[in-house]
Length: 248
Image (tube, rainbow, N blue to C red; front, side, top):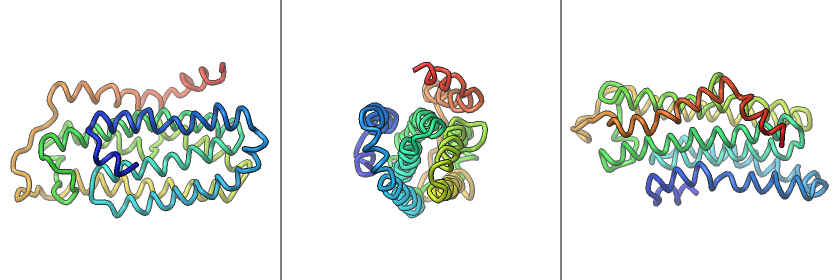
């Protein structure tokens, strides 16, 4: 998936992260858990192990990446590992949390890929070492990128926090150690998210690599505005989703 993101255009990355990546979770919910509950319960320890390996490996790999798209792509792998843990916990909290986290990830990750696409259109590079001090030259972009990065790491008040909290609490009822590793993956998520934010937005401007800085245009601003609104709206009012899921 990280290689696919690097080769895809910005619109393709947004669709891949926001929609296609959720088809696996939909299949688990609709077919694996729905049609074969006993088999799902039998294989849940194996799924736990694979998910924990995916979370830890993806988080440690993310910190070493130099391509901006690969950083977001590997973080998506870690988040999907948390989603599968929530689904196979077979608890109401875990399944509900996995649905919320999938919706939140589609919003936040898609918005981050849009932000990186806007940077690439200006400077024709995604290598992180060429960027620094964007807070001074691109304040609007920096504000949106900060919001989506905080949503990606699951800050309370953003859309990802509710889903992650429900997944950990639901998994804790069935497998304590798995919930511990799941929470550890979220700590790693905060580490690479804040590392990325610090490298991009703060520090000295590297004028030897980028000499022309332009902030968001009006069209780009209004493209990112709905994502920012949904990031906080679903974090403050998750009952909009939970009430609909409860009816189903």
